[in-house]
Image (cartoon, rainbow, N blue to C red):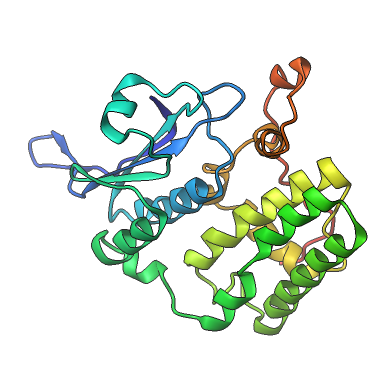
Length: 263
Protein backbone atom coordinates (compact mmCIF):
# COMPACT_ATOMS: atom_id res chain seq x y z
CA UNK A 1 0.00 0.00 0.00
CA UNK A 2 1.22 3.50 -0.65
CA UNK A 3 0.28 6.85 0.84
CA UNK A 4 -1.58 9.09 -1.56
CA UNK A 5 -0.49 12.63 -2.29
CA UNK A 6 -2.57 14.07 0.53
CA UNK A 7 -2.19 13.89 4.27
CA UNK A 8 -4.03 16.53 6.25
CA UNK A 9 -3.13 16.62 9.92
CA UNK A 10 -4.12 19.63 12.03
CA UNK A 11 -1.52 20.26 14.73
CA UNK A 12 -1.55 21.97 18.07
CA UNK A 13 1.62 23.20 19.72
CA UNK A 14 1.89 22.63 23.45
CA UNK A 15 3.60 24.91 25.95
CA UNK A 16 6.88 22.99 25.88
CA UNK A 17 7.11 23.27 22.09
CA UNK A 18 6.19 19.69 21.26
CA UNK A 19 3.51 19.04 18.70
CA UNK A 20 0.56 16.80 19.36
CA UNK A 21 -2.45 15.79 17.30
CA UNK A 22 -5.56 16.69 19.24
CA UNK A 23 -8.13 15.26 16.84
CA UNK A 24 -8.91 11.68 15.79
CA UNK A 25 -6.93 10.32 12.85
CA UNK A 26 -9.02 8.76 10.14
CA UNK A 27 -7.52 6.63 7.40
CA UNK A 28 -9.27 6.18 4.07
CA UNK A 29 -8.03 3.40 1.81
CA UNK A 30 -8.86 4.07 -1.84
CA UNK A 31 -8.27 2.27 -5.13
CA UNK A 32 -5.04 3.22 -6.86
CA UNK A 33 -4.66 4.10 -10.50
CA UNK A 34 -5.08 1.16 -12.86
CA UNK A 35 -2.24 2.68 -14.90
CA UNK A 36 0.61 3.12 -12.42
CA UNK A 37 -0.79 1.43 -9.29
CA UNK A 38 0.23 4.35 -7.07
CA UNK A 39 -1.67 7.57 -7.70
CA UNK A 40 -5.40 8.04 -7.04
CA UNK A 41 -7.69 5.83 -9.10
CA UNK A 42 -11.04 6.68 -10.68
CA UNK A 43 -13.36 5.00 -8.16
CA UNK A 44 -16.32 7.36 -7.68
CA UNK A 45 -17.12 6.26 -4.13
CA UNK A 46 -13.46 6.60 -3.13
CA UNK A 47 -13.41 10.21 -4.33
CA UNK A 48 -16.79 10.97 -2.73
CA UNK A 49 -15.66 9.88 0.75
CA UNK A 50 -12.22 11.43 0.21
CA UNK A 51 -14.01 14.77 -0.36
CA UNK A 52 -16.29 14.32 2.67
CA UNK A 53 -13.34 13.61 4.94
CA UNK A 54 -11.11 16.28 3.41
CA UNK A 55 -13.73 18.91 4.23
CA UNK A 56 -13.76 17.73 7.85
CA UNK A 57 -9.95 17.78 7.95
CA UNK A 58 -10.02 21.37 6.69
CA UNK A 59 -12.32 22.19 9.58
CA UNK A 60 -9.74 20.54 11.88
CA UNK A 61 -12.24 18.09 13.38
CA UNK A 62 -10.09 15.16 12.17
CA UNK A 63 -6.70 14.44 10.68
CA UNK A 64 -6.89 12.50 7.45
CA UNK A 65 -4.54 9.94 5.99
CA UNK A 66 -5.32 8.61 2.51
CA UNK A 67 -3.73 5.37 1.29
CA UNK A 68 -3.92 3.98 -2.23
CA UNK A 69 -4.00 0.25 -2.94
CA UNK A 70 -3.27 -1.35 -6.30
CA UNK A 71 -6.18 -3.80 -6.59
CA UNK A 72 -4.55 -5.49 -9.59
CA UNK A 73 -1.69 -6.51 -7.29
CA UNK A 74 -2.92 -6.06 -3.71
CA UNK A 75 -0.09 -6.31 -1.17
CA UNK A 76 -0.06 -9.25 1.25
CA UNK A 77 -0.94 -7.15 4.33
CA UNK A 78 -4.04 -5.83 2.57
CA UNK A 79 -5.17 -9.33 1.56
CA UNK A 80 -4.55 -10.54 5.11
CA UNK A 81 -6.56 -7.76 6.72
CA UNK A 82 -9.37 -7.33 4.21
CA UNK A 83 -9.41 -10.53 2.08
CA UNK A 84 -11.43 -9.82 -1.10
CA UNK A 85 -12.89 -6.50 0.06
CA UNK A 86 -12.49 -3.62 -2.38
CA UNK A 87 -11.92 0.00 -1.31
CA UNK A 88 -13.12 2.42 -0.18
CA UNK A 89 -12.33 1.28 3.36
CA UNK A 90 -12.46 3.66 6.31
CA UNK A 91 -10.39 3.01 9.44
CA UNK A 92 -11.28 4.86 12.62
CA UNK A 93 -9.28 4.05 15.77
CA UNK A 94 -8.52 0.55 14.53
CA UNK A 95 -12.10 -0.13 13.43
CA UNK A 96 -12.44 -0.92 9.72
CA UNK A 97 -15.70 0.02 7.98
CA UNK A 98 -16.03 -1.85 4.70
CA UNK A 99 -19.33 -1.11 2.96
CA UNK A 100 -20.35 2.16 1.31
CA UNK A 101 -23.59 2.63 3.24
CA UNK A 102 -21.83 1.82 6.51
CA UNK A 103 -19.04 4.29 5.68
CA UNK A 104 -21.59 7.06 5.08
CA UNK A 105 -23.41 6.21 8.30
CA UNK A 106 -20.13 6.17 10.25
CA UNK A 107 -19.04 9.57 8.90
CA UNK A 108 -22.45 11.01 9.77
CA UNK A 109 -22.82 9.52 13.25
CA UNK A 110 -19.33 8.94 14.61
CA UNK A 111 -16.83 11.32 13.00
CA UNK A 112 -16.67 14.83 14.51
CA UNK A 113 -18.43 17.32 12.26
CA UNK A 114 -19.72 14.62 9.94
CA UNK A 115 -23.35 15.16 10.85
CA UNK A 116 -23.27 18.67 9.36
CA UNK A 117 -22.21 17.32 5.96
CA UNK A 118 -25.26 15.10 5.60
CA UNK A 119 -27.98 17.61 4.81
CA UNK A 120 -31.52 16.26 4.46
CA UNK A 121 -32.92 17.39 1.12
CA UNK A 122 -35.17 14.94 -0.73
CA UNK A 123 -35.41 17.16 -3.80
CA UNK A 124 -31.64 17.20 -4.28
CA UNK A 125 -31.28 13.50 -3.45
CA UNK A 126 -33.82 12.66 -6.16
CA UNK A 127 -32.29 15.16 -8.58
CA UNK A 128 -28.81 13.60 -8.66
CA UNK A 129 -29.99 9.99 -8.40
CA UNK A 130 -29.26 7.77 -11.43
CA UNK A 131 -27.06 10.35 -13.18
CA UNK A 132 -24.18 7.88 -13.29
CA UNK A 133 -26.43 5.16 -14.75
CA UNK A 134 -27.21 7.46 -17.68
CA UNK A 135 -23.49 8.02 -18.31
CA UNK A 136 -22.80 4.28 -18.38
CA UNK A 137 -25.72 3.66 -20.74
CA UNK A 138 -24.46 6.38 -23.07
CA UNK A 139 -20.96 4.88 -23.15
CA UNK A 140 -22.29 1.38 -23.85
CA UNK A 141 -25.12 2.13 -26.29
CA UNK A 142 -23.51 5.10 -28.07
CA UNK A 143 -26.80 6.35 -29.51
CA UNK A 144 -28.72 9.62 -29.65
CA UNK A 145 -31.43 8.52 -27.23
CA UNK A 146 -28.94 7.83 -24.45
CA UNK A 147 -27.17 11.13 -25.13
CA UNK A 148 -30.49 12.95 -24.86
CA UNK A 149 -31.38 11.17 -21.61
CA UNK A 150 -28.15 12.37 -20.03
CA UNK A 151 -28.63 15.87 -21.42
CA UNK A 152 -32.14 16.06 -19.98
CA UNK A 153 -30.81 15.05 -16.56
CA UNK A 154 -28.03 17.63 -16.70
CA UNK A 155 -30.55 20.28 -17.71
CA UNK A 156 -32.62 19.51 -14.60
CA UNK A 157 -29.56 19.95 -12.40
CA UNK A 158 -28.75 23.21 -14.19
CA UNK A 159 -32.29 24.49 -13.66
CA UNK A 160 -32.18 23.57 -9.98
CA UNK A 161 -28.94 25.50 -9.50
CA UNK A 162 -30.30 28.49 -11.43
CA UNK A 163 -33.53 28.56 -9.41
CA UNK A 164 -31.80 28.29 -6.04
CA UNK A 165 -29.08 30.73 -7.06
CA UNK A 166 -26.63 29.22 -4.58
CA UNK A 167 -22.99 28.23 -4.97
CA UNK A 168 -23.64 24.58 -4.20
CA UNK A 169 -26.60 22.18 -4.41
CA UNK A 170 -28.28 23.00 -1.10
CA UNK A 171 -26.78 26.39 -0.24
CA UNK A 172 -23.52 28.30 -0.13
CA UNK A 173 -21.63 25.63 1.78
CA UNK A 174 -20.78 22.16 0.50
CA UNK A 175 -22.55 19.05 1.68
CA UNK A 176 -22.55 15.31 0.97
CA UNK A 177 -24.60 15.80 -2.23
CA UNK A 178 -21.85 17.96 -3.77
CA UNK A 179 -19.26 15.32 -2.89
CA UNK A 180 -21.45 12.80 -4.70
CA UNK A 181 -22.34 14.88 -7.75
CA UNK A 182 -19.06 16.56 -8.75
CA UNK A 183 -16.99 13.38 -9.27
CA UNK A 184 -19.79 12.10 -11.53
CA UNK A 185 -19.81 15.34 -13.50
CA UNK A 186 -16.06 14.99 -13.98
CA UNK A 187 -16.48 11.44 -15.31
CA UNK A 188 -19.22 12.66 -17.66
CA UNK A 189 -16.97 15.43 -18.89
CA UNK A 190 -13.81 13.36 -19.41
CA UNK A 191 -15.17 9.94 -20.42
CA UNK A 192 -18.10 11.36 -22.39
CA UNK A 193 -15.76 13.44 -24.53
CA UNK A 194 -13.25 10.63 -25.07
CA UNK A 195 -15.63 7.80 -25.95
CA UNK A 196 -18.61 9.45 -27.67
CA UNK A 197 -17.56 13.09 -28.18
CA UNK A 198 -20.18 14.20 -25.66
CA UNK A 199 -19.79 17.67 -24.18
CA UNK A 200 -21.81 19.45 -21.52
CA UNK A 201 -23.53 22.26 -23.45
CA UNK A 202 -22.20 25.75 -22.81
CA UNK A 203 -25.74 27.11 -22.42
CA UNK A 204 -26.06 25.23 -19.12
CA UNK A 205 -24.43 28.22 -17.45
CA UNK A 206 -25.59 27.49 -13.89
CA UNK A 207 -24.06 24.01 -14.10
CA UNK A 208 -20.78 25.36 -15.46
CA UNK A 209 -20.71 28.01 -12.72
CA UNK A 210 -21.20 25.24 -10.17
CA UNK A 211 -18.33 23.23 -11.68
CA UNK A 212 -16.15 26.35 -11.70
CA UNK A 213 -16.64 26.80 -7.96
CA UNK A 214 -15.92 23.11 -7.34
CA UNK A 215 -12.69 23.32 -9.35
CA UNK A 216 -11.48 26.04 -6.95
CA UNK A 217 -11.73 23.74 -3.92
CA UNK A 218 -8.88 21.65 -2.55
CA UNK A 219 -11.40 19.00 -1.50
CA UNK A 220 -12.06 18.34 -5.18
CA UNK A 221 -8.65 18.95 -6.75
CA UNK A 222 -6.77 16.88 -4.15
CA UNK A 223 -9.14 13.93 -4.59
CA UNK A 224 -9.64 14.12 -8.36
CA UNK A 225 -8.15 11.34 -10.51
CA UNK A 226 -6.25 12.12 -13.69
CA UNK A 227 -8.12 12.19 -16.99
CA UNK A 228 -6.14 9.12 -18.09
CA UNK A 229 -7.33 7.16 -15.06
CA UNK A 230 -10.97 8.07 -15.67
CA UNK A 231 -10.64 6.97 -19.30
CA UNK A 232 -8.89 3.72 -18.39
CA UNK A 233 -11.59 3.00 -15.78
CA UNK A 234 -14.16 2.71 -18.60
CA UNK A 235 -11.77 1.02 -21.01
CA UNK A 236 -11.40 -1.80 -18.51
CA UNK A 237 -15.18 -2.05 -18.17
CA UNK A 238 -15.42 -2.43 -21.95
CA UNK A 239 -12.48 -4.90 -22.08
CA UNK A 240 -10.39 -2.40 -24.02
CA UNK A 241 -6.63 -2.17 -23.51
CA UNK A 242 -4.77 1.06 -22.93
CA UNK A 243 -2.13 1.79 -25.53
CA UNK A 244 1.49 1.92 -24.40
CA UNK A 245 1.92 5.62 -25.17
CA UNK A 246 -1.21 6.37 -23.09
CA UNK A 247 0.31 4.57 -20.11
CA UNK A 248 3.41 6.77 -20.35
CA UNK A 249 1.53 10.07 -20.67
CA UNK A 250 1.98 12.71 -18.01
CA UNK A 251 -1.29 12.82 -16.02
CA UNK A 252 -3.61 15.64 -17.05
CA UNK A 253 -6.58 17.12 -15.21
CA UNK A 254 -9.41 18.79 -17.12
CA UNK A 255 -10.55 21.75 -15.01
CA UNK A 256 -10.99 24.50 -17.58
CA UNK A 257 -14.34 26.22 -18.06
CA UNK A 258 -15.57 26.92 -21.64
CA UNK A 259 -17.62 29.98 -20.73
CA UNK A 260 -16.90 33.28 -19.01
CA UNK A 261 -17.87 33.02 -15.36
CA UNK A 262 -18.79 36.26 -13.66
CA UNK A 263 -18.73 35.92 -9.90
